Length: 482
Image (tube, rainbow, N blue to C red; front, top):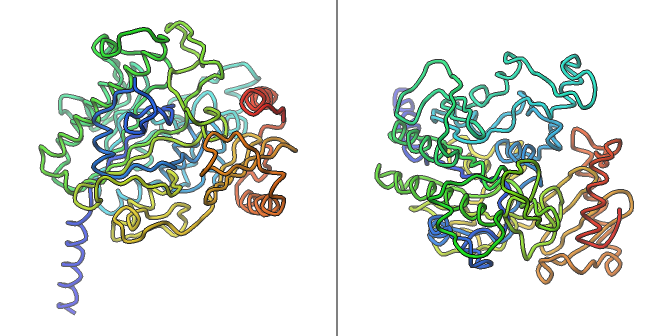
């Protein structure tokens, strides 16, 4: 028995010693074209992220699990299709407290976990369904903004969802239990600062690493960029002179700030001697909100507008299950494990990140995971992933990606079939040419949808604004009115 105990302790110690640190960089509304290493645009400058991609893996068919902020974040952190627990779009927030998240899983096996940046899974004024079901008096009628008591809010903050250390916020107000000077606080608190929000995130991330580099950690860095409002300091704007739309200039400046932050964080790993044992991912939450015409509204306009980012050559934008809404920059790096210089075309999805991270621990991939462990592919143990279907549901849209094929539907009667290997821009609808394949996809997506909490695929029914927005998008990008 003593011998067994010694071996068990040794195995446990070995497993803990081999656990990688994990960092996930998650940008906000960054279009697929806006990464220098993609080789699509000349004006985007992201040398540090490009270096990470060249030293690791760049996925050309990387996807978010939703074309909108909140559900995409829920999918990333849970490793499950967010429809399984009913978070179909922003109005379905907050994320249920019953859902186990990646930081909670890692926290339970001894990781120190941290979030710096945007959370966006808390209860908020957009949480129409939750408010109606739980606190209807807070939102007595449409058009009245809910004023939610703090004791309701805090139960959905990140420290209640598996994060030990938090520095989360959006612009100038932050909820923190540590600061950028190295101090920690037993009780979290709100602070305000006029410092540039992207630099704040990078500085807080560096402080987290400085304090926690001696033991395994998980650091989630969701940058609030290039999402509106468009904000950049002169330092970053000066890097992009010349004639261009001002919203484009600000987007480039904001992404340059993100890239500087990524570079400083990667350098800090090296300074602490932990770069060999840190697994890093970089991706966006969804495609860019082009707003169809890329109108260059004044920078002072802070409501929904083009954020200056670009999706080309993809069709569509944020909010659509067209490629422009869900295909995103997607990079992985692990200096000692992942051979560099890889460009992988296998379709992958943000859900795979949780499975991949847990696959490197003694716990393994969770049984309820919808993603797969990408390490065998990234380390060249296998040449390709086993073919699988990836699914999406948003408003009245549904989609399936399997191999080269993409099935897309919107509303009751509008369907598309694309061969993405030859038609990345989704310009040739092959639905009429392959009726048997269409029937197979219909049955497959129906079966998948039945497993979601809200199986009614027409989630937008009774919400005219959304149905109208979809009609406008699909008329503009595909020439059809659903």
